[in-house]
Length: 444
Image (cartoon, rainbow, N blue to C red; front, side):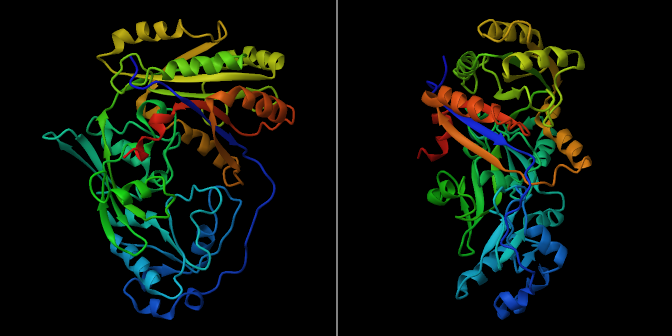
């Protein structure tokens, strides 16, 4: 039986790639010596502060490319002490100046910016880690098992590669791996694994945090508990994550990646909810990843920018269906396996599929390496970069919709707004998660 009775909350991600305007609180960069306290020039990290126009320009925008806030300077720290010293100085100043930690700058509306303040370029720490940004260890004498101590500035793709060298990996990911550990843990880290393993913020054993007073604090569920739970998902308002201890489990080698098409939204959501009802971490018949998406008749190619999946021979059949129905719902499921589970994989998968109500003849399967599946969005990013379509405004809307209103959302938004107004330039994802798993980090 499942570990939890599923109470489904649907995550809606509506992402439109192309828009034509840019919100701005623009102005011309000024020397940081004119905007910040003059005594800042006398402390040891002054030579790591930059107001170079190129540095200021980069720190004034983010992935959303819709907001603009010009900082006085950018700090390129060589150690955690540099960050702590800057925060302490600001805290003791009257008035204090704004400080924002910036990893990959994948915020949407300027959250990684600091108007007339200092943006801390966390990536700079990678140059001073001497290859020790990810340390994999085993605590065989405790219930923890294997874990990785990871710098907050490290990219998840680097965490993946480092842990796979030991045959292990974290269990909860985001769809896109070129994000920093500190960045996603300051938000939530939600993806198709959340229904089973919880978001990334539910998979942290311990953290080192620099607080708003510049104090360096180690926290966990047992130590400095309030800070631990405030920082996870705290949007950077309670401290800067400089180290996180992430639990690991044995990594599979290969995954079976399946997409199924529906023209009936009720059948689509019913099947999603059925699959997430098998959600125990050790439950063998549970899937490892589940998401859903919309295909639109006026929308982009069935193989959108996020990943290529359908073969060319399938396109005409899918497009014919889209012409007939306007919207198709795509259920995307992944099940991990390795040499030991290969023999039983097909039997388990077929047993699951027999209980589902997808359109007959419209189920597509392929087997790919585990690392290639997790890093599937990267190729789409490179493709858009080559076309000059990556560094554009990215309005992105995430919504949590209760199960009781998901059909109303389909009728009122997907059909009456998105389809009728032909709003089809970006991916639209819809998938369920179990509320108790999504909120486990808050249960103390």
